[in-house]
Image (cartoon, rainbow, N blue to C red; front, side, top):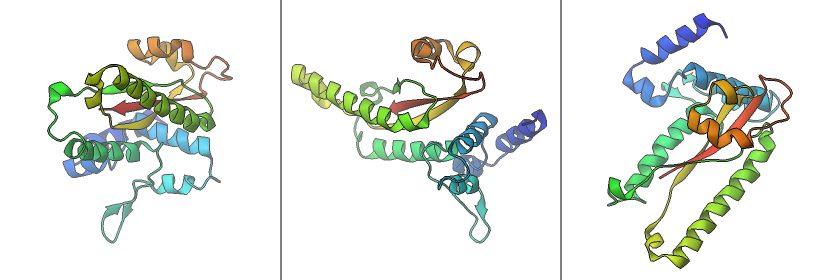
Length: 196
């Protein structure tokens, strides 16, 4: 995409009303690029491709925005995170004070193959539940520990490990970064869990 297109998209986002921002009507350039990469990775024959392509368009009759609800869609996962966080605070963490809460980001191994993401997520969730169960058996303080979390997926180029990742993320992922990449612009998917 050209610089002019990025500038236009940024102007749309920054000049949008708070209602449109709340709906996530427009995506910042990095998120828009992630959406394009996801669509390219799944291909036009995939059943979710058309849904993702229509995501963010407005229904002319009722001025409602169409959502694809595909977990890798940046618009949909940001809207879902907002909704689920509000629900968790109102239901699961009612009466819990801020000093009793913590925010967790759990990074799992990055991959070039989208097919390995679901098994990795399942294994990670099982491990996390087992860790909490084990801790509860040995320490009663863990009986009050609970979590609500949402999976997200970042998209990187293979070369990003050296020049675009922040220091802490680079240190955490260096030993896990896919070594057998064929091109420096090859997509590397980074699933991670955000939890309270």
